[in-house]
Image (tube, rainbow, N blue to C red; front, side, top):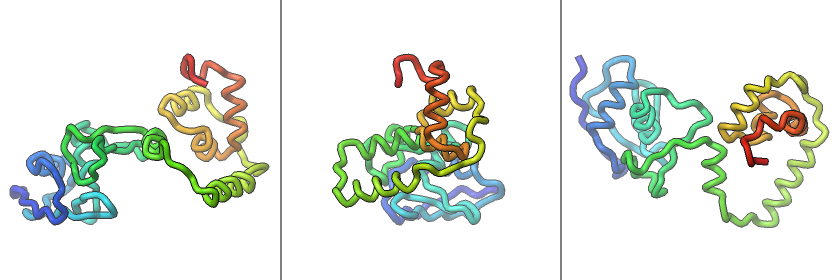
Length: 179
């Protein structure tokens, strides 16, 4: 029988503890301790469930949606306060869109630009397998979810030019008006 959970909030996380308790009970596979410590894991509040450390914002979002979030989904803090895990402050976004949003208007140093350029130069001309075996329906879904061409090419172990060519040959893969 599961005892009620009491929280020790060691990082001043802003969270509805009743919701967090429900989320932990939903997530766990066996009864948990009566006391749970909320601590910083990296830069985000987390709890341990068994031997798993899980960020509170991700745990709560999964509980609210009733599903485990896939690896390509992030939980974004709307007010950018990482300690604020209230429902009104959290939103699910695709990783690429999330990263783009956080990197918008950032200015890269000349050194960083050189490193990116060098990495891109080294990548060109790499021969990879499975160049043409990419199902159109899967490619369309990945594009609709907002995945980058580089990410998709890594997923299918092919050159990004293969993905670009596949899109060029099948313009219906793109959303209307997008290019």
